[in-house]
Amino acid sequence: MPLLLACRNRVTALLIALMIIAIPAGSAALGQQATPQATPDTTEQLAAVLPEWHDELLAVMDTVSATYEIDAEVRLPGDGNPIPNITGTMTMEYTNTTGDPLTELPFRLYANAFDDLGDLLRVGVVTVDGADVTSNQLDDSSTVYVPFSEPLAPEDSATIGMSFVSAVPVNARQNYGIFNIDPSNGTWALAHWYPMLAGWDPGRGWVLDPPSANGDPIFSTTATYDVTLRTPADWRAVTSGVEVESTDIDAGIERRFVSGPSRDFTMVLDDDFEVAERDVNGTTISSWYNPGQERTGEAVFDYIAQALEYFNDLIGPYPYTTLDVVPVELFGAAGVEFPQLFYMSAGYYGPNQNLDVPNNLDFTVAHEVLHMWWYFMVGNNQYDHAFTDEGITQFMSATLYFSAVYGPEVGEIMTERHLTNPFRSNIGGGNDQIVDTPTDDFASSGGYVFAAYTKAPVGFMAIYDEIGEEAFNEAVTNYFYDNWFTVASTDDLQEAFEEASGQDLEEIWSHRFEEAAGEDDI
Ligand SMILES: [Zn+2]
Image (cartoon, rainbow, N blue to C red):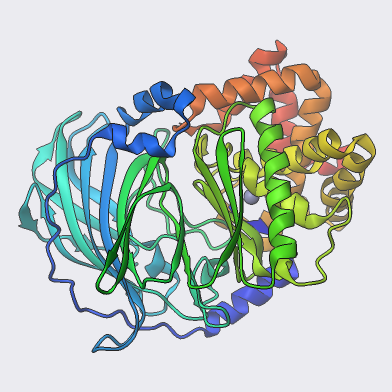
């Protein structure tokens, strides 16, 4: 979920979002049929993975239920094409890992949920094992079902083909602006730009909720991606995964990317990005920025480098060859995480950005880097239990990261600024919340923000104080290795702390996360 700015900004963003007029999707090329292709060798995906982790992640990729092959083209307005869009075909090899026969398979078209007309992302020809089928799109337009003529038995596989056109809105502020063309600098921010297999939560089944209004809308499970993308020649493409091929073509440039095990494939396109790029622990960190923004771009690079080293050492490895960060005009969010990539609010890239120690740019970077562990590698149902990724991420970045990197006094300053002071003022102001509440069940976005980003991290701090540094560090390492590339439950996290410490933590857990009794803690 995004690291949110103050609630006031969030409300403003929502009000502005209501005023956005949707752009109708183009329909050209929807009749195009996905071309069945030979299933690529899984070992090709290893380009995204550090050599010392090839064996472990190859084993992970052997168990994923979906492999995506996407062939897509950026289409600019003109030549009979009225609006900017991405036109493509997707071919997915799906293996039924649900344990039950399936008569249909749900896909999410998240872009449609926040668009007045509900048709930014249109699906055209749909095939199953090469035969045309009629898909069934639900009224809310963000879910489409692909039927099987015969039920797909557990562990059986099918090949789903889908053509799609994804109209990219201009200056759209829905969902913090994560899917948007920013006309001021030409940046295309492309979250959820393709039809995604619905996420599978082993505790709940398919997650088909309306996309969250308060938090991150996307929930997805680990897959692999092989993406071919055509853009104008001079465009940069910053993506999840790593570029493995690049070919000049008549109309521009064609690039191919692979992701390794990944929950999503997000892209940001721009024609004049510059980059600060170096290796840390074998991973190439790329901090992208617009011309004239190198001061923040370089600082972001330094903060990523120290955060990546610290969390690699504390938790376990970030096993990928690349990690990218890009400035994006965000509405109501300071940063938003995706696999192997995160957005930073473009507001940080001004010439007067505060870079004194400690500063909030550093804090946001550390928070988003830590999401590579909590959200990306260890998944969780962010809609039902947002606190298990946001809360622990907020505590570990505000308190542990700043204490370790800059010393305990600086750690105390950031703990007070981001955790204990807002905790006291919210409780004192009568805004206590039950932390473990589904995101949109909070009465207000302010209640959600307090629960996930303030009360939950204060709760994890109480657990840290109760069990001590050694047990806490052992718990997060075990939680990481035991749950990577799966969807972890709240019990998995609680048990990790209990097993590492040898303590029964039920009382502290329920008090901090399942009750509204925060006045006991100030
Ligand atoms: Zn976050």
